[in-house]
Length: 226
Image (tube, rainbow, N blue to C red; front, top):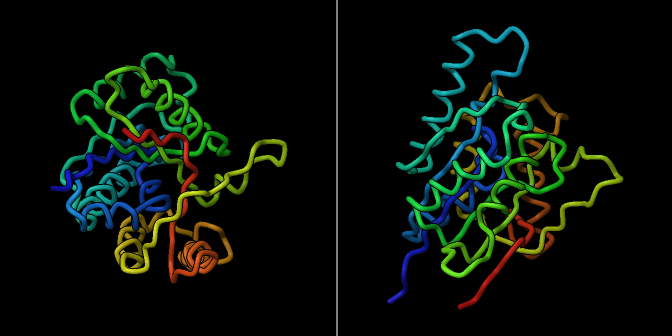
């Protein structure tokens, strides 16, 4: 009997899960895996002239995205948006460790270490720290996802995202598109890289590069086979 995976997605902001791995999440759910999503910030408080209705819209978008995906278990820590570097790393690590203890994931998806966005970078560092590969650690696989308008905008002096784990999302692209539209205020008009046209173009390119119609790719941070 095949044991279901316990999958944890750790995203800095609501919408990162949609951009980075919504197709893969949908695939995990379709295959009967247990999925939990952890958001680190509300994703909007750092912007100028933010109103209570803007915050409500972002929160509502997150709830609609979870409903669309079929994810019942999710949490938002509400650390300061785009200011996670002002929080002691130990505080963030300990918060993640508590979630790990409660969910016992064997697979984690999170941000690439060298994204332009500071919250993405801090989230990655905190995840890797919380998931130190010591005896008894439940996490056996860690994958980093790419986020358009952050991963590809980083300085050329920094290491580049290198996708080497490919997930066929051909059957789940429509679901990913539905999830993305839950965050309408975060989408931009083409040719912005966070437009639906560009997001689909990336999925098509990642897929076609490997003989698939649509794909999401991840950088392998760890795989432990037991």
